[in-house]
Length: 363
Image 1 (spheres, helix red, strand yellow):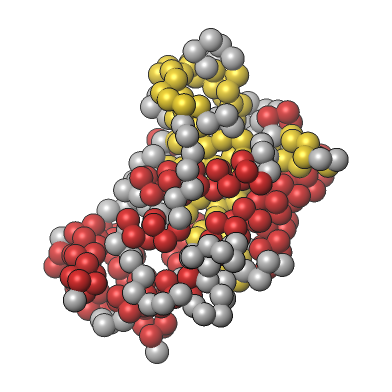
Image 2 (tube, rainbow, N blue to C red):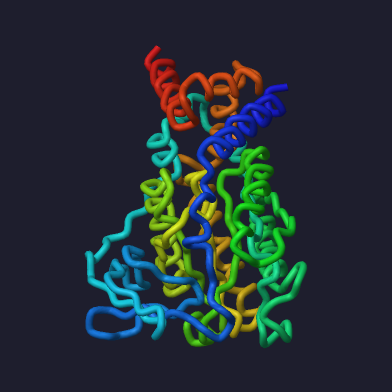
């Protein structure tokens, strides 16, 4: 009974939050990709190329390079499709444990770790379903389930082979326009009702082949770029989470994660702090190379959330989910909605819940 009730409460809370403060309100200003064949070039202060991407770039966007140098955009030339930057800092990446991120969110585990070491679940979906890979699919876009779905399937399969449960949604959010993120928001809510440990929105970029081509050992793969929306209340946790995954990837497969782009917008990451957008190669790369790259990334995800055996948090996925259920099962969906309204919005309601949880932990 607890799990269905939790789903109902959570959906009611988040749906009401969406209705009160639409996260997609400014999407016309940021959710825009360039026509295929056009891309922005991000330049360092000396004019060197940092990034080539089909994603529109804005002043104040930031980019963490493969070498962990953080740059901020200070000038954009929309005619020449170039953006100039300043160096902000050299970042020393650290892995922030999953349990620590949960504590920062006020979700301190109160149950013991799962003694069976059972792994949790990862959710995967595609906001831009039509994205495809020209060398393999014969086109960069297929109206319906494009080649990106096969990349998502490869990601899901690689996780499942590591005994990770996967919720893979192939819901369509067509067409590939500015409203796609608004439509995929409903899919995110559906997946969140399954209580996954993390969500990944799998995309491919539009850029020259060399921007993502990567040789690891004797095989070619595509590198992966993270995209984090800098206009959402979860940015602090999103950043630590993305940097943690990049640090692990750097250790396991140097170069696999080519960088982290902090862009204008939210990419539905306001709904969950452990949500990340992946750019798995570009339209100019082959789909098999993208599938190989994302399969390697599955190892990084598994390592961060569930392994190795000596990691204290191993198996904590099930316990953590039971903890969340314990937090909200005391109420019904109707009561949750009333609580949000009475609190003056979702943010205030969440803060009250966190305060109640802290009091409960002290008892």
